[in-house]
Image 1 (cartoon, helix red, strand yellow):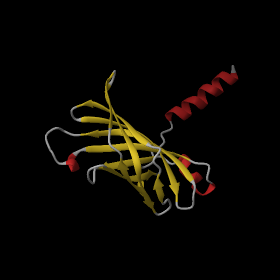
Image 2: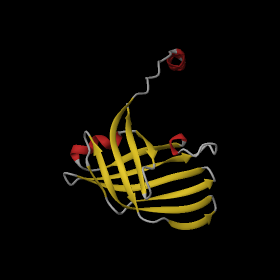
Image 3: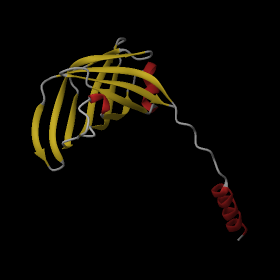
Length: 164
């Protein structure tokens, strides 16, 4: 019986004790600039219209990570409606010092339908990394957000921020 009251008391104290949430901060991590091969139109599928954009290559530039995007990646995107593209990317980065980093990101490119200016689009992704390279192991537990843009035909670019 004493154990029951003790557990109840500890639970109540934990529940009533208010912790403050940490402030969300970010810092620049890297820029991705990706060259695209011609789109592969899969067409209408159950959830929308599937369009695959294979990567031709690209560059990665940052204070801690520099390298190139290998051709093995692509965006397996899904057009949900006339204003919304669901992003689904998997890519491999080969760093300047020959480490391999697997990068995945998903998110949305959404136009409000009122403005033709691409700068007005919502173009955001959640980014994650996997590597076994000791120098870049910190990326394995880094939460990141990408802000995208279309710098020209056949190109897509992201500025990636680490969330702290």
